[in-house]
Image (cartoon, rainbow, N blue to C red; front, side, top):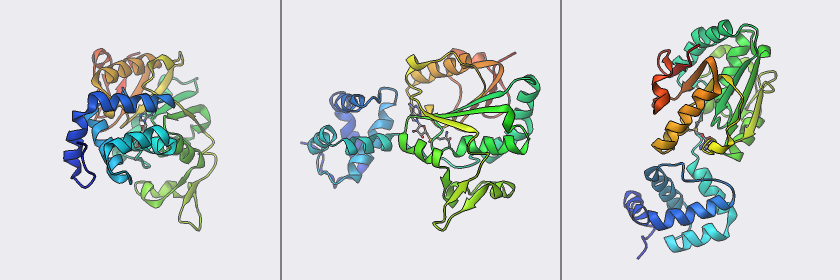
Length: 280
Ligand SMILES: C[S@@+](CC[C@H](N)C(=O)[O-])C[C@H]1O[C@@H](n2cnc3c(N)ncnc32)[C@H](O)[C@@H]1O
């Protein structure tokens, strides 16, 4: 009755989606036991990721798969990692980072001249995104006047972010002028040096948990390639929350395939591709 593992994965994804009413709830419950909510994610996305995880595992049928999820916590955490795809690299959307350097950060410095710039990278993955900002701020001699925060739901990604060791393919869009901020090790890893590393405070945070909203305000919020996997209603709520979390004059930086949804859409001013400003 359950799909055999040798079948092609699109078929499997279709079968899994047939069971979604029952099976997603089962998975959801198991995952919630360790504090992670899955109801934020779109079901088609979940079906694809769960199907991929199942295919990759040594388990042969869905019954055994769910059994293993209940009994083997490492396996469950592996599924969560599989759902939280954390592909990231330095200067992703290179031209947007150039725009950030030439236009967005100078605009923020001018708008908030006597304040420390508060910047938060939400869904920061391995830290390459916020460290790209940190490198730019350093080149603008503005790192000491900035407070940088970065959060993610994925402990392993955060561990890598704090460790600040990168492989060459994660640095392929790095401009040569920033290369001397890294030290190469024998293992072909590049470690990011101080003061770029220590400028960022990393912490564990689930952005889909709207009860965890705080009252802090930011000058720049970066949330790219994270909410793309979330349901429309949650995306709308998050964009409203981002609007609230920004100081008037503050700016939101989103991913290249994303657009602002919901009632906050008309409140933001567009500053060109991927940048939106809360009016002063
Ligand atoms: C594709 S990566 C994007 C990383 C980076 N923002 C970039 O664009 O290069 C998506 C990240 O979002 C994180 N993520 C997914 N769901 C999350 C949630 N509910 N709260 C916080 N982070 C989440 C994942 O763990 C992953 O590290």
